[in-house]
Amino acid sequence: MVDIPASRRDLMKGIGLGTGMLASGSLAEGAVGKVKEQMEQAEAKASESVAADPTDIPEPIDRFEPKTHEVELVCEEVTAEIESGVTFNYMTFGGEVPGPMIRVREGDTIDLTIRNPDRNNKPHNVDFHACYGTGGGAEATTIAPGEVERLRFKAMYPGSFIYHCAVATMDFHISSGMFGMILVEPREGLPEVDHEFYLGQHEVYTDKDKGKEGHHGFDFEAMKAEEPTYVLLNGEEYAYTADNKGPLKVETGDTARVFLVTGGPNVTSNFHPIGNVWSKSWAEGAIESEPEINVQTKPVAPGSCFIGEMEFPVPETVKLVDHALSRVVHKGMMAEIKAEGEPDREIFDPNPDESNGGGGDGGEGGY
Ligand SMILES: [Cu+2]
Image (cartoon, rainbow, N blue to C red; front, side):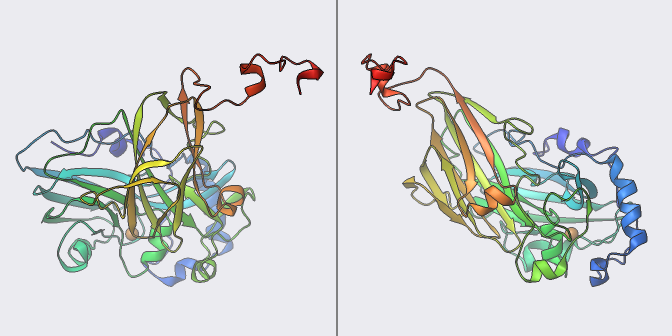
């Protein structure tokens, strides 16, 4: 049994790929020549979105014996839209940002195969924060285009952990999209909830102003200065909002668990649900700890994760944001959860004059 949804692995067939004109892993990657840019613009025509579906995650674990998971990660270099009319050369695991969520139980063994297809340009590897061992497996899994490697490790401690590419230019690769989450459930499992959502925050440094149409190259100087052009959830501007792919959906009375992985490479998220609260939250994804109760905004550092649970007593659209709000207003960061159902005006009443029947029916004398 494989714990990565097959739909993810199949998704990127037919997507425009890198063109092979760059030296692998070289800082020369940052030098954007005219010819290269024209080629990139041409290839970008075949591109799609890299935004991973937040609901496309493995089922919760209902099992009391350890098992071995055969997990395959495919490194995919793809050109896709970062916002409408703007393309960018992503590097990804499985063609999506964040990479596929891997879900195991404490004591399970992960038998990993990592592939770097020969259509790619650069070397890649993977560092799991969920294991003991040199570089989290990075050295053992470093592969050039056309190569395959394997790694086996035992998930000794529960929690939600980032995995990310960790080649020499790792900040560049992570900023281009190479990060995801491995969830190691405690032996006793996780409490049941009605919905689970999986999101990844990271930031992108491009060589043009945000929103300027066309193809954006990578800006290494901006990355060194930690001045991102885009700060994103799931790799694309406002990907899961009403204005793009649509909000995530729940009903009033439901509970939801949100998993966030912050790839960075440099920017800490300040994760807040506007119009709601993290009724239970586990900083750092440290699920064996006692949860913090009713937390408003939680820092989630690069290279770390967060688990938060929410309740929806009234209908509303919750905006999931980094509360460093210029990232929301100017850099593309936001997702939405739409809760539909009957209002409860005792809990939230947007129009109390009407509810009280006290003359708030549109008449000017209502106040
Ligand atoms: Cu890489």
